[in-house]
Image (cartoon, rainbow, N blue to C red; front, side, top):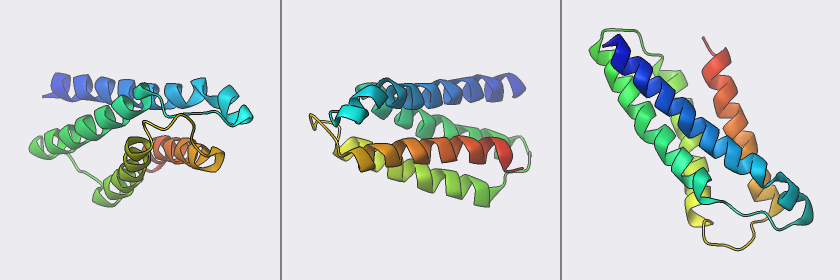
Length: 117
């Protein structure tokens, strides 16, 4: 079971990297007001959602403690991120504040995962 959990943790990190990497590649465009949500951001957020749900299930099946409040907060942030990216994915340019919000929520999700024990 540990190997399976570690595999999905790795895939979850790949999703985080895709979402954050997509955001970071658009920072220069954000400065000029032409930033857009790239497909990597959508795919990264979806990967995070799927692997996160699987990780919770695997940890509960392995009788490991799961902090449901932490998972709920992370899930809520991810649903907001996913909703914004999904709705605005076809726009040629996204409002600077909306784009920055997605980056801020992504960073918050990462820090919650690492710092909330």
